Image 1 (cartoon, rainbow, N blue to C red):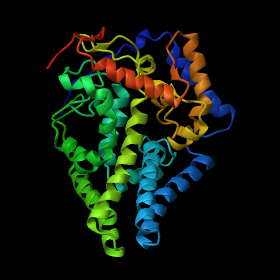
Image 2: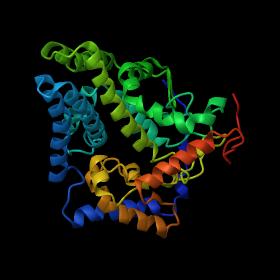
Image 3: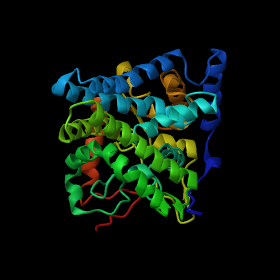
Length: 371
C-alpha cells in the first residue's frame, strides 16, 4: 500500500504547540480531572440511547399509532445524530474512556446505527484529522460531485446552485452511508492519501455482519411485531435518516467550510507551509460556544478547534479548555476562528458555498479549473 504523503513544517511553530499542550495538561492535573468521560457524559450517553432505542421500542409496541410512530421515527433521527456526535465519535477517537475495551464497545454504536466504525477511523480519525481541508486528501470534502467544498475541486456548471443543493445532499448523507458509502470505500483502491488500500478479511466479514444485523432489527422487527406496511415503514425509515443526515451534515460542515477557514495546498515537495497544529487552527472554526444546549447535544463539536488539537480528550471538557486554547493562540498570533451563534455559522457556510459555486472565483492557493 502506497501513501501520498503531505508533510507539515513543525519546526516553524513559534512555540504554540508546546505551550497549549502544557497548559491543557496542567488544567486537568491541577483540577484533579480525567480527560475522559465524567458522570455528566455518562448521563448524556444514557439519555441519547433512550431517545433512539426508546422511540424504537415504542414503535414496536404499536401503541403510538401511525402518526405517533412517524413522530417517533423523527425522534430516532434526532437520537441517531446525537449518538453519532457524542458517543460513537468520542469512543472511536479513544477519548470516551481510558479503557480501550469501553471505547471499543461504545464504538460499536456506530455500526448499530448502520455505519462502519473501522472505516470511520480511517477516513475521519486518520485522514481528515491529519489532512484537514487539503484537497485530494481530506475525504470529508468529498460529499458529492455536484457539491464543491474545496476550491481545489474542478468547477462545474451545477456548482452555481450548490448553496441550495448542498442542504438536500446533507439530508441524504446517512442513507447514502448505510447503503453505499461504506461499500464504496471498502472497494476503493485510492482513499485520501492512500493508494491500493487493503482491508483485513475480518473487517470485510464484520462489515457484512453489521449491515445484516442493522437491517434485521430496523426492518425485520417492525415488519414482524407491528401492523405497519412496508411503505409505512419506509416513510418512517427515510424520515429518520433525513433528520439525522441533515443535522450531521450541517454541523460537520460548519467546522471547516466557512469564510474564515483556509484551504492550503502542498508545494511541489509535498510540504504544507505551517506546523500541523497551526494548520488545524487555520482550517477549523468554532461556533455557538455560549449555547450550552447545542453543545450538549452535538458532543462539543461546536468546539471543533479543541477537538482537532486534542482528539483524545472527551468532548465534555471542550468548553473548559477552549479559553486556554484561545488565550495561547492570541499570544502567538495564531488564528482562532469562531462564530458567536449557530445562525452566523450557517450563514457563513451558505456564503462559502455560493463563493465556491461562482465560475469566476479563484482561491489564492488554486488556479481555477473548469470541467
